[in-house]
Length: 117
Image (tube, rainbow, N blue to C red; front, side, top):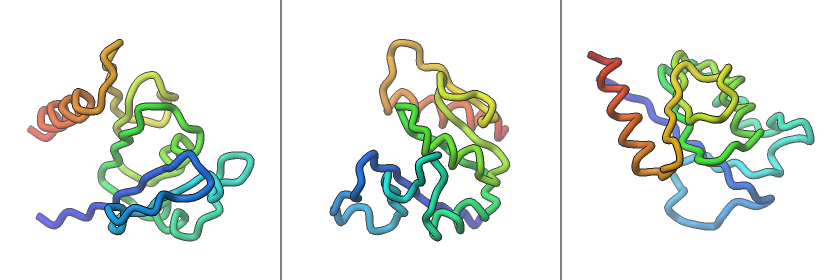
């Protein structure tokens, strides 16, 4: 099975962090979006044009820029966290008051395994 993975990160600042761990991913910052929240980045336009099988939004907070990218993505199946705008996701996970990344990822893996079988 050939799996094509693209990691996209959003940094809610004007400049991206200078960390070597981010070399294999696309980092977006506020300056790459216009006032309406639409991307001005040519690399993001390439991302939006790719028909992924699965898009997993790992954001723990609601950013309009990320919501825009999810909405415009051509991914066949989109997974997100409640309470972000529900109309853009095919499957949403509700963590309740216990919102932490480990629990969220564990839930994503759990439900994707169920959906796969």
